[in-house]
Image 1 (cartoon, rainbow, N blue to C red):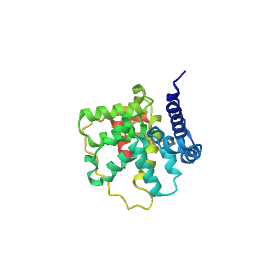
Image 2 (image 1 turned 135 degrees about the vertical axis):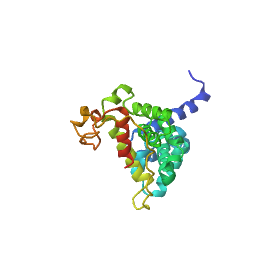
Image 3 (image 1 turned 90 degrees about the vertical axis):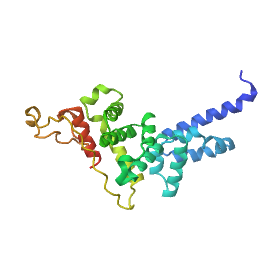
Image 4 (image 1 turned 60 degrees about the vertical axis):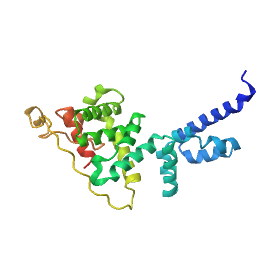
Length: 246
């Protein structure tokens, strides 16, 4: 039997875990957390604002349901401080795309942190940014590794499937237009062009030209090029990068 003095501590830990699960899985996380706050003083004062709860919050859903921009910004700041991966991703997108003409030299620390934490849209966008910058073989290798992580954690299917990019691709663009360049905000400055790279590019060879005449194929229902019609992994990633930053 646990000592009596440890019971309140254990109870609080259990309540924090419950609140964290609600924050992560609820269809209306902020509304449900407000309901939990009314259960007792302990939940109101210590549980619902615990770092684990803020870290676990389904921030994307909470932001879509937020009442105003000021509330959204406060929510993003609070969850960012607690290590919420979606908040870190949004901050990283703001840092990178907010630099406009100097974006190629912008800090990637937040995107890297979110990607390391398993946030697939952050891994996708970081891979695109690294490939775009063309800063060397090590960065290219890391970009390929990130895309492999996005691909169901199985590097083998990167070379034969395009299904893995549609979800992170859409998530990244929704984040960009809602929380980096929101409606009615000033028109962003043009992004700098990618750094040219010398790919050994065989797209015009007879093997591929008879199919499409160029690298890539008619797009599918998700608007992305079918992966099997490119001549190499590098060409596939380049096309995906061009589409991302068009």
